[in-house]
Structure formats: structure tokens, C-alpha cells
Length: 278
Image (cartoon, rainbow, N blue to C red; front, side, top):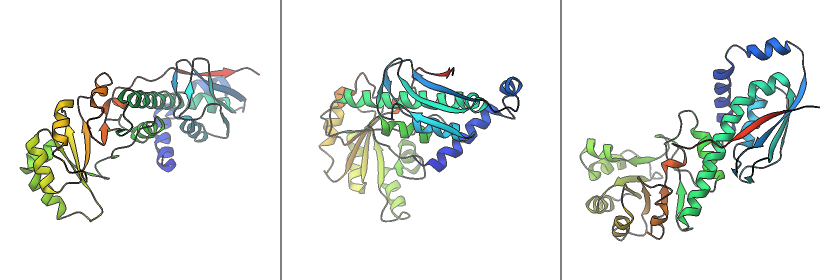
């Protein structure tokens, strides 16, 4: 993860939550410095992801002593202490919600990814994410996918060339779209195209694309179309794939399966932030 970008995002999240100041904490504690400690505690089972991000949240607010008890990528069970934070009480209270929001969501995304890999049960196929992330959270969502054992697809429209159905519809054909791209891009850039049937597969191969995505295709159709693609072209599969039917796509010969559900409808894991008396 790019920590420079992460810090900038975190500063935005804190500004959204704190605004002109934490009125409740300011009224209760005033200007005094009161050192206290709190801990993140798991209330559900899963995978921890976002410990380093939670640390960045508190560091954005002041001097802290942060001690991780469970590292990113490791398992957690109810009652496990994930991390302890020692800082001024106003720092702890101001950073609590943003840190929890990120830690809970990232842990859920990591668990989703791990479950998907296990459900597929085919180590020859890489599970990867999509752009179906919550606005503003993409860098954290995609980091969580990596922590869960998955891989990242493109981060946005700026870092990869992917011709989707609407590109093709607007331009007239796969062939026309690829020709226009080839005339403008550098020699190091790859072109991916989305297809839904055998005719489009053959057209994409003839056009000389580098990656072909089978979109919203049943496993049986994927197997039929796979034999039409030369080995040197990377094959991706996506669309209408859920945790329930994922296993059906094992041994289909594709290289990647990109899954929107890893991030777009994730349910945050239950983690609490508890004050310690001492």
C-alpha cells in the first residue's frame, strides 16, 4: 500500500468525522493531557487486516504508542486482542471510529478473499478484485484483498486498457477499438477485451489482444470458449460468479477470476475498541 496516499485519505476521513473539533471530548477533558490506553478486541472470527492502517489513523492525530498483537493476514477469534494503543485520551476518542471502520471493513474483505480461494480450490487460477469498491476506500479494499491471499486487478481507468461492452458498442466492433488503441499506446501496454460469446472470442484473438475476459458466462461456456484462445493470451473470467457457484469454475482453464463481491457488498467484521483502566 502507498502510505502517502493512505495518510491523505485518512486525513480526509478524520476531517469528515471530527470537523471543527470533538465537542464532547473537548468539554469533558479540556486542554489537559491525560494518557490512557485502549485495545482493539475481536468479537467475531476471521482474518485481521488493517492493523497498520489503524496505526496510521492515530499517528495522524498525535503521539501514540501502538502495539500490534495480531499481524495482518493472521486469524482472529472472539476475545482476541488485536492491538493496544497508548495516547492522550482525546487522540484515542477522536481516532476510534475511523480506525474501527477501516479495520472492520478490511478484515471482512480479507476474509471474503480467503473464503473465495478456499471455495474455488484451484491453485492454477488467481482470484482478483474489481473496481467495485466503496468510493474513497479503493486503496484499502485492494490492500485487504492482497492480505487475504488474492491479487489486484486495475486500480482505475488510468492504469490499464480494458475494452468493455460499452466501448465496443460505441465504437462499432472489437476490431475497430483495438486498432484505435494500438495506434495510440506504447509498446509496453497490454489490451484486455470483454467478450460474451464465441464470435467475439475469435474476433478478439484475430485483433491481437493480450487478455480476454469471459463476461457473465456459465462454466460450460467458459470451457467451450477456452479452447478457441491461444495459450499466449491471458484469460480472465468475471460476472455472475458468487461464493455459492465459484467451485464450478475450477478446472476451466482460465488464469484469473475477478470477483466484485469481495468488496462491493462486504459486511464488516465485529471488532470493538475498549478503554483500559490503570
